[in-house]
Image 1 (cartoon, rainbow, N blue to C red):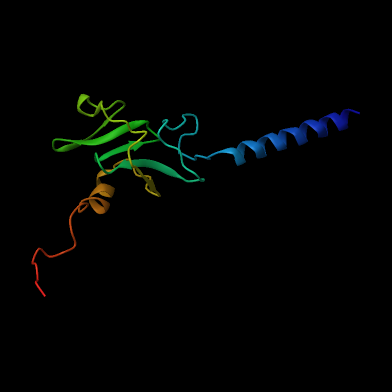
Image 2 (image 1 turned 180 degrees about the vertical axis):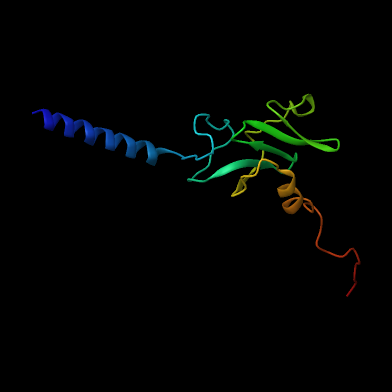
Length: 129
């Protein structure tokens, strides 16, 4: 009788865990004890440390739970955004997940991947055919 009850609870636990995994997104960050912010809802399992908001040039570090942005001539990390960003609704803003970049310093990544963002590939010389 005791093994039947144990098997029942094991089966119930397994079904419950499968239900949880199948119901929604699974987030894997470097720091599992802190959930990601409300605006971050991936639709699959990913290893992500940074999220980038290209319209505002703001990064969010999911591990350190800090915002990273360019302030004058330096990149700064803050737990809250400065007053000039207070009106932003990051839940509605477009963002990109930065997959595979684990370094603490975001500046090299930004310089390599986003320095030319918004610029055209054209040479600037217009040709009329």
